[in-house]
Amino acid sequence: MSSNKSNRQKGSEAEELACAYLESKGWTILERNYFFEHSEVDIVAYDQKVIVFVEVKMRSSAKFGQPIEFVDDIKVEHVYKASEAWLYERKMEGSPVRYDVVGILQEKGAAPSFNHIEDAFR
Image 1: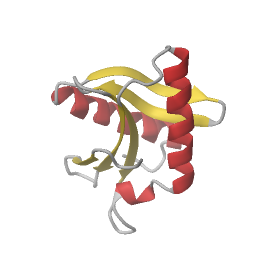
Image 2 (image 1 turned 60 degrees about the vertical axis):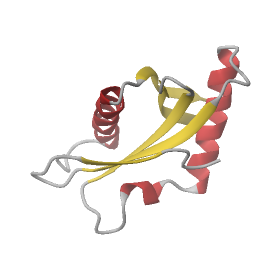
Image 3 (image 1 turned 45 degrees about the vertical axis):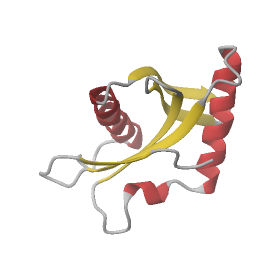
């Protein structure tokens, strides 16, 4: 990832990689970048059992920590808020859900490595 790309471009690339990774596991991507007010869910997917709300974090280096370490309490609150709205809009409240984080480390010249944490926060 070149440093001259915007954060939005980098985020989109990270989500593309995460979607391909999840689809390779047999998951169905239901929606990307769902916004509600000031909250967002990067990926809404179905893993053949439950609806999974996925936060994606990508870094080009682990120098300052692993990508998943950058999911803070404020981000968790936003994911919860957006996921509740997503379920409400689709009349799916009460459906079984899970919250995962996919961390992607994409170092220069190397293939991306994935760290998928299921049930990352409750």
